[in-house]
Length: 123
Ligand SMILES: [Mg+2]
Image (cartoon, rainbow, N blue to C red; front, side, top):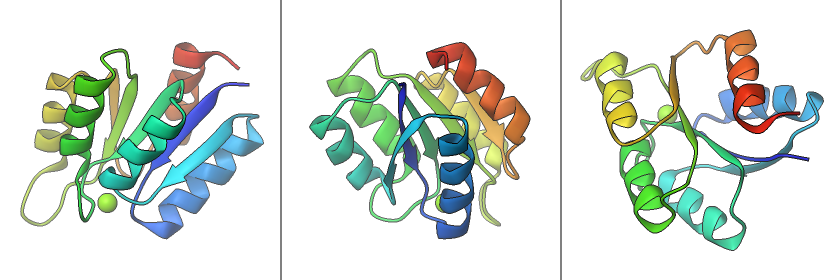
């Protein structure tokens, strides 16, 4: 069973995505910010990381950078809706420059996300 690390500070979004991915049969580990994401990944490397960008403590851009420096093979899908101060497209472009395989603007296209997850890790 493929193991996914879901990193999202918004509890509602995290719960929804977590349930959706578990329903599809994936083993999902959750983290609420980038710092926790790096700790979880160190404990147990996952097949794929789904990473929100705007988060407290350590944001997704920093976390992708840290993960891929320590574990160059880390596969990441980035998600973001941006904020009133910074456009989601800009953040997702940065995530892609740091090696994210694919990015999704919020609200996340669930069917597209599931398709991408399956492409990357299988079922
Ligand atoms: Mg967020």
